[in-house]
Length: 290
Image (tube, rainbow, N blue to C red; front, side, top):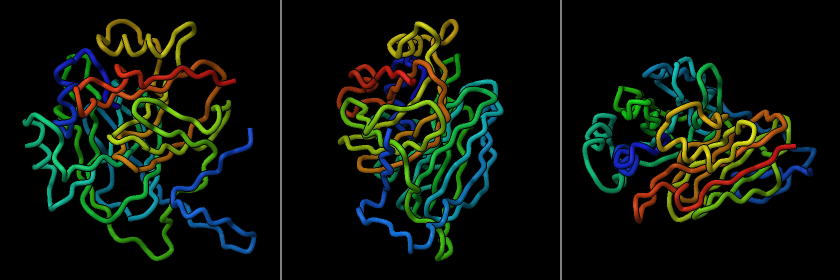
């Protein structure tokens, strides 16, 4: 979650720093129908990640294929676990060097989702299909002092290793699909009260994220966007999950258990053309959950 817009320049440079009938969608895109005779698909691997102020506690290796990251925020600030794939033999040391440069993110840095921001004491999750290679968890949320958590050490490398032949390699079935485009959230159907799996697909030409927030009574997602620019006073909403930044064409999913009320969707990713956050291009939406 590219969060805390009052940072202005820092957020504009975040890209450089790293930088109802259910829909039942599937991420393999094959469109093949299931039959009763087919064996049940393997479940995604589950990985527990704990976030504190300012570090991650997480395993050093994760199996390839569909992986559900269960993020628990044990800190006193908002945290996320943005997943970044490091290509071309790059390491977190190279990632640190990229923090100091200006301009677009290097081509070897790929944003592949992960659990988005969640409030202290709460949990969030996301499921991604990960190929073998080198990765990192990173938190791109700033503290009230304006410093990104990543700059305070909230970066942890991990390796995705070849999994067993019976590992899940596609997303489980989902109830709702939300497509990310420039600059909108397009949902296959309204979100409902209760537990549901939400598939997030980035159909836009540049990276996007989905931040789901529960709005305080009488507040709107526009109020939350304004608050994020200063982070002063009580927040008019609290993040309750979502999927971190995804490259063009990528997918991620998360499970949400929603109560009735007002919610909002927002994207804080800086635009590749003008550096303005996508919310300032109108990428925010108010939702009513009945």
